[in-house]
Length: 279
Image (tube, rainbow, N blue to C red):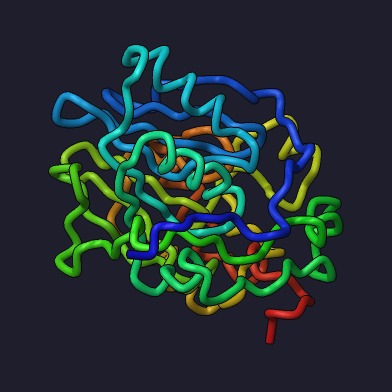
């Protein structure tokens, strides 16, 4: 069994903090969003326990563990971890959490090479059109982590382990195996970075967490045609509320209007005018 787990050699603390850092928000009944520096960790309650969606920034494991234990009791742990994708700010504590809790991790089959040490992500594109965050992205980790046989592919039938009523949607573009999670009953969408609700290329908006539906982070997105098609999938499911990888939860008419506007103007407002991954 491949049980040795490691982060990439380039994993390190990233000193980026928003005004919402440490907040624990109730998105909707049984769904919580913990803000870890500038990224969201989602807790979904189900079956008398909970499931964690994404795991936050590097060096944040003790904070995530504390959030779980304060809510559910000392020694409590989630039933599983679901990953929307494997970028450093979404898997930054996953090795520590699996070591602590000994729970399974699930991700899309196409994301597994980046989670089992086989393939690094492309280096962030600091040359891409955008603000200060894009410029400093060259310091962001991109190397694969190694979860060995602790990570498993999501079921092919679209069901989500431990979360009855949810389905996963393949939403590539930001990464090849990026997925989003949708609960049809109440229209809850966990979108990862298929789109975000803060302009990720604006340092001011990242720090202030001003809500605005925006395209996926430009410096890490490698396939803009696929990103557009993925956004269309998510618009088509007509979510009532969305929690994304970055930014505050949004819902109601604001979410619907801003999503439809982003889709209609995707090439103008989401796709950068220049960068390594534009064509």
